[in-house]
Image 1 (tube, one colour):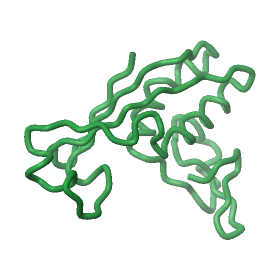
Image 2: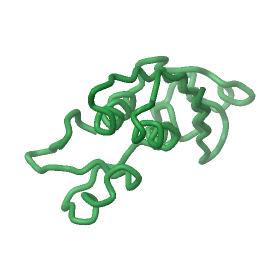
Image 3: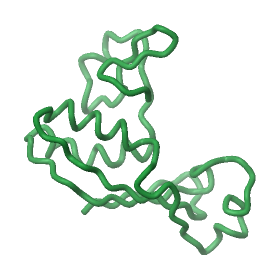
Length: 133
């Protein structure tokens, strides 16, 4: 996701592809930006509050499986490290925070809503879990 209401890539405009947020625009879009999995989970929990303009600061925690949190080889992506272990990574700096913030600004532009997100990685194949407070 590239920052901005109308993100572009190589000069082509993209619509943010979360149907619950941009359903009408997606129907006619030539280019659609795919939301991240954590971003989707967190936004689905926040969209109704954002649409009602009552979204507030929240704490969010998500856990991704063996295919998330980077695919490069390292000690912390190896099975023996992740087995029976949940490790936080990119705490409060995850790349999907920008797209979550952009969606909330689209729904309630007069109010900045800080989003705190702590992603974790564990051995869970093809599963992402999210919790909101």
